[in-house]
Length: 75
Image 1 (cartoon, rainbow, N blue to C red):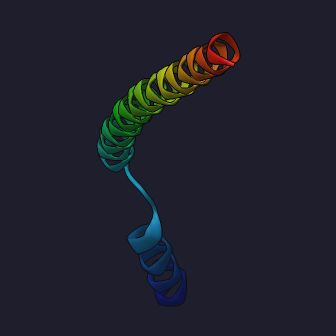
Image 2: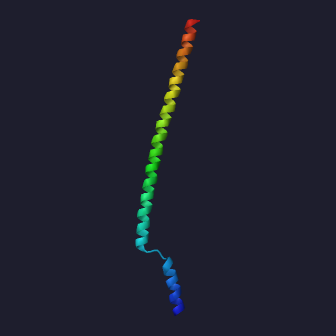
Image 3: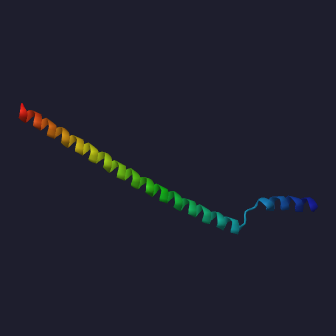
């Protein structure tokens, strides 16, 4: 009987209680929310950078067209 009690006590030390699960759920929810916020910030930063690159390419293309037009008109 004592050996069974000892085995059960050893098993009970590793069993997770409902309160532990509830705390883990709250922590997990907080971590997921933080990750979602980080992803949103990354998405916004990439979007801003993409627009900067597009505007630079459009500006460079416009400048090249203007230079080409001036060269053709002057010759």
